[in-house]
Image: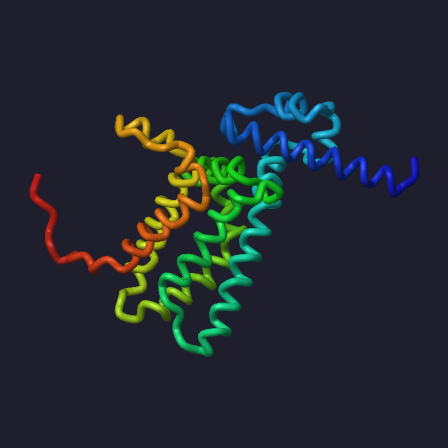
Length: 230
């Protein structure tokens, strides 16, 4: 086998392991997924997984990294373009929200970028992360979150910065549950939901954007009111 063919074979094996791990972590969670389960689904031996990743923790990080790098680069590109069009003026909050959260939702329409499998994995990971994943995610998001935070500060000059940070936190939480699927909805209500419509990014995106922008623009809370006595 030539070196070129060998390198391609190794690359294909690595991608098969990542695809299998993405699916298994999404279905079973990090703790419920073993390296043997992943290699069985990928159709490779355990030695191959250890060669490429070394540990389950490193495998999980790489599953997230290969998708998040693409998403975050696109987020920065879109923000750069929006700021260039604005010519130095503050962006509208809706534009910032669409660039950040809309980019993520559009992944669901692109199976090459992970599709709904990765979205559900990301939603599950964010809402119930292990400590090492929290550290990893903080590093992956650091640059893009700083850029978007500053854009929001400029966009909402009359809103205290602390309030903007809190609202962005709430927006992240809402998005995490939305992309994780409707399992939580079924746990808390017997309302009927059209699963097909909810799972499609073209339907979820406008619903979520309307909700997020409404929350971002909501009246400021009256924090001077003391909580009721117990």
